[in-house]
Image (cartoon, rainbow, N blue to C red; front, side, top):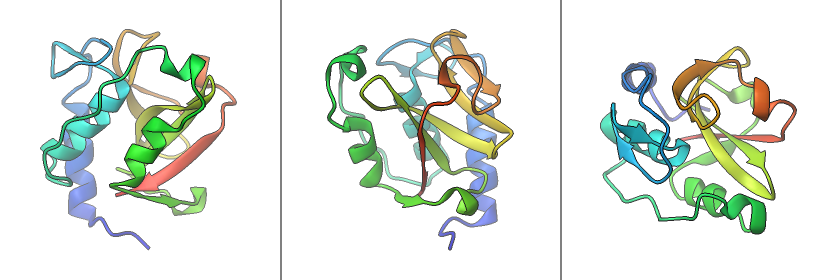
Length: 145
């Protein structure tokens, strides 16, 4: 069962697409200037009025290669509930396992066809197919706020 309304989901996608082409920059969250994947999704949900303003915990850019703790997923769970793939709707969140932990986040536009995320290899916030390039065949988990 979805807790978000259709209007809220539309607002999330409207806000998210407003971030397109913002350059990728670790540990940043300025629209048009620089953002990473965690800061992007947090900023979108805050700007859309889905969650109250909060500060994303600081982290080292390469933590996912050296630690197994689920820092991002644990943080997401404080705002969202995990859902099954068949429950996914636009505006929900997908986390990708990279390295040793779930360490990449994207907002779902149309699962399994399109997401929007701050993508390091592309160097910016882009719309993409959910399993393109470096996130091909990686395990995923889904969340709804």
